[in-house]
Amino acid sequence: MHIPLWTSTLATVAVASALPTLPPAGTLIPSNTTFPLPGPITGDRLAIHIHDPAVAKFNGTYFLFSTHNNISIATAPALKGPWTRAGQVLMNGSVIPNQGSLDPWAPDVHNINGTFFLYYTVSTFGTRESSIGVATSRTMAPGTWTDYGAVITTGKTTPQSHGFTALSTSNALDPNLFYDPFSGNATLQWGSFFSNIWQVPMDAGLIAPRSGSPPIAFEPAAPSPVEGSFLHQAQANGWYYLFFSHGVCCGYKIKVARSESIAGPFYDKSGRSALQGGGEVIFASQGHVYGPGGQGVFTEDDGTDILYYHYVDTREGFSDFKLLGYNNITYVDGWPVLV
Ligand SMILES: *[C@@H]1O[C@H](CO)[C@@H](O)[C@H](O)[C@H]1NC(C)=O
Ligand SMILES: *[C@@H]1O[C@H](CO)[C@@H](O)[C@H](O)[C@H]1NC(C)=O
Ligand SMILES: *[C@@H]1O[C@H](CO)[C@@H](O)[C@H](O)[C@H]1NC(C)=O
Ligand SMILES: *[C@@H]1O[C@H](CO)[C@@H](O)[C@H](O)[C@H]1NC(C)=O
Ligand SMILES: *[C@@H]1O[C@H](CO)[C@@H](O)[C@H](O)[C@H]1NC(C)=O
Ligand SMILES: *[C@@H]1O[C@H](CO)[C@@H](O)[C@H](O)[C@H]1NC(C)=O
Ligand SMILES: *[C@@H]1O[C@H](CO)[C@@H](O)[C@H](O)[C@H]1NC(C)=O
Image (cartoon, rainbow, N blue to C red; front, top):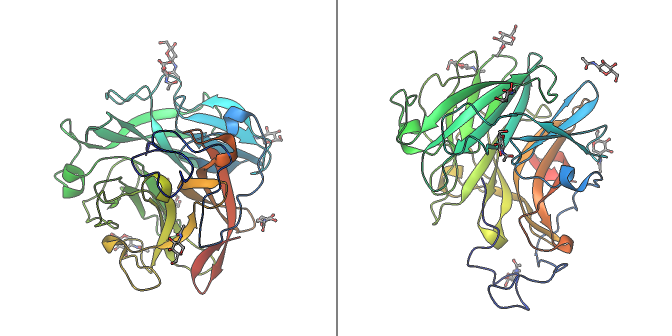
């Protein structure tokens, strides 16, 4: 989701400056936990500055999708770059009738049986009038995408709520598909700020929900800032990990909770449920890394899982201009740790 970088609480960062002045470029963010630095990255300035990234690979080329520019596409020979801008997914915006159809966001992409399914959001800001749409392509190249429009819709124009509570109460933002190649079962996760993170089983064609289901994550503390979920099953150990972004402003960070089943319940190390504010912090602001979130997991050909995300590099100044970051994941005692 598109979170204003600066809300009212600059306190932990803006040591030297009063509101609304932003801290000077290069301000280091204090942290009691040490996280690794994001991996190296090179490329065109606008190709690597992204929002809500999604990464996939086809025929040796890495593809990076981002909010903005009708879902922008950048390509590179390696995750570290060099990245170049390649075009966009939805040349003319989304076919979904919504005020936000000319500015879709939060792409999520998966290769399923050789077809790339790209889920995206259109929304009218500040309302529940939102849809998650899907477009497909066999190569991901610009001009090859077919837009199928809405998969789920929430808000007053709800033609597809199917009577599911999940759809009649939530806001259809920040999609994430989980597909189990062994059973063919798929679920769609979504949801944002103020509400919960929701999950519904999808039909075999992956373009409509099969039934309604209860939420899978919630932060009881106002303003309930959980969003941008990504469900991943680690081939290394079989656990299902629910990654999500948590917090506002200076405390924006990446958390994870795990489960033995696709539908949860998801718990953190201390046994706290993701529905009750639980979750391990695996990446957070520190040094020149500020406000990481919008994450996903990409699995390399050799099986290595890589967490990618956006963050602000404070050396570039504090703005909404976010850089692609990534780190390999190792699993220690069944928990993901970034290296
Ligand atoms: C670090 O830990 C100390 C002592 O627990 C605490 O007072 C301080 O707020 C923490 N700082 C950050 C940035 O979390
Ligand atoms: C895959 O890459 C090779 C080498 O760059 C190229 O010749 C081939 O056309 C590509 N295949 C597809 C389906 O894009
Ligand atoms: C998306 O494409 C439409 C049609 O070309 C254009 O009007 C709109 O400005 C584009 N949106 C963005 C965010 O670039
Ligand atoms: C975009 O709109 C233009 C003008 O209506 C049309 O010619 C073109 O085919 C459209 N492209 C796509 C991918 O829908
Ligand atoms: C993917 O292929 C499997 C095996 O052929 C099939 O059962 C499944 O329905 C396919 N899924 C999609 C979404 O095409
Ligand atoms: C797939 O979904 C069906 C129907 O919901 C369920 O009975 C089955 O246990 C699921 N399989 C897996 C591996 O999750
Ligand atoms: C991350 O994993 C990739 C793929 O296995 C490997 O090539 C690379 O060296 C790893 N990077 C680090 C920093 O461990």
